Length: 111
Image (tube, rainbow, N blue to C red):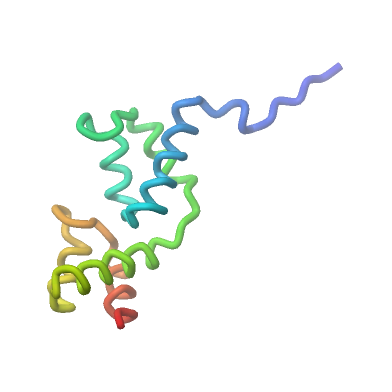
């Protein structure tokens, strides 16, 4: 008699936890992939091992352009920033860390 092992059963608990935390940051805080990864591995953040954080980033299915747009809308509404300033904030390594493509989508779709 053979025992089937489901793929999910072979995934370490900590990897699953990192994925759940990544989904929470994406859904509730509209963070970028890079910002979520940094938050997951940060000693001041979640403290996950890099492998668990990378698993989370590789396995989360999310519309990152929409997150960039939501961040851009927040900057436009609450801080009255110009489009160029919002774009720079979205792509900055000290800011939101979205890709240029994601940031441009956000600027193009700001209302």
